[in-house]
Amino acid sequence: MSKFTTFYGWLDKQKSRKSPLGTFAGEAVRDESFPKDVASLDALLTYLKSKKVAGVTVATARIAWQTYARGEKKL
Image (cartoon, rainbow, N blue to C red; front, side, top):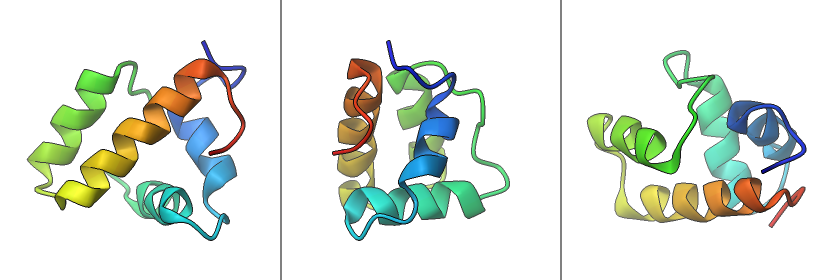
């Protein structure tokens, strides 16, 4: 698992990147309802689908979660 304590904490560190990950991270950090304690990819995807985000956002979130879960600092 990641060196970061939460996915949200990891995303916060990615928000300044000039990439789809950075865009997703910035949007997540600005979203007051984003689940700061999300503990699984399924829970993240359920949240995003409830917000009716674009498919590309879901794909970026999936890759971001997988990167986080491997413990990598960035994509």
